[in-house]
Image (cartoon, rainbow, N blue to C red; front, top):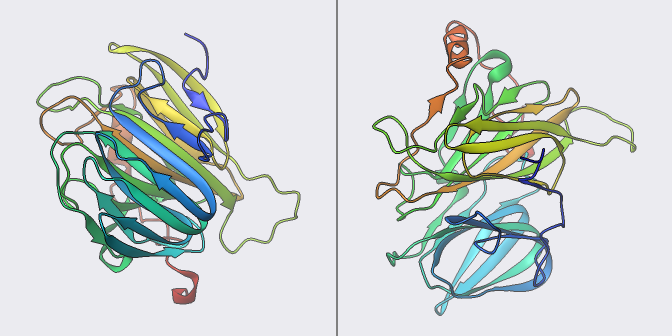
Length: 295
């Protein structure tokens, strides 16, 4: 197993006007997909046997599909609170128009469900963990927040010096306590909110994934804006935000199990760390909301 075989630097998956495209054309990849574009104008989403979620990363966009038109109120950046999102059902072609960065999460599916526009004010925001393991999760595409057949999508903001996707965990076996899910991590990094930095600053984070009985994987990487890590199996985590830099990632998950569920198993060597969070306070820097709402 080659180190970082499942890591794709920004632009290395460019295709058809998209900065990155993850789909079943990648060897060993079956259930999930992702498209990312730096847009100044219009880009087409071809009809396909996938369900999708359109996620503005920076900027606002309009989406036209099946004679319907939705305006997605976006944000200045992924570190500026939640965004509007749009779910599109299987077989729906669409056109996205606007200026900024946009992501489209995908999952192979067969059930045709209606489109759903979820405004940012209705996005469930969760503060997860405690102490230096505190992170902010936007659960706009999870089973409790959005109807879908297979697709599970959320995004995580980890402030500088904190760890997320921790303890390391996996979801690659069909057991009562675990579900089988491929997972995509799309990363962005920025100078920590409210911190002055020189123009030479180069934001980054760290990400790791390693083998489980389900398969061999060895990811040990510095990640920056636009990088993508795929997790077909194995333990994954931590995703660590370096001092001075905040880290963001968009997670896309789906798998072969009939139930759409996110059930995980911690690495037995590290799961005990969760107990240390008891009695610790959450990081007071969170939640990150739109800057005009900051005190």
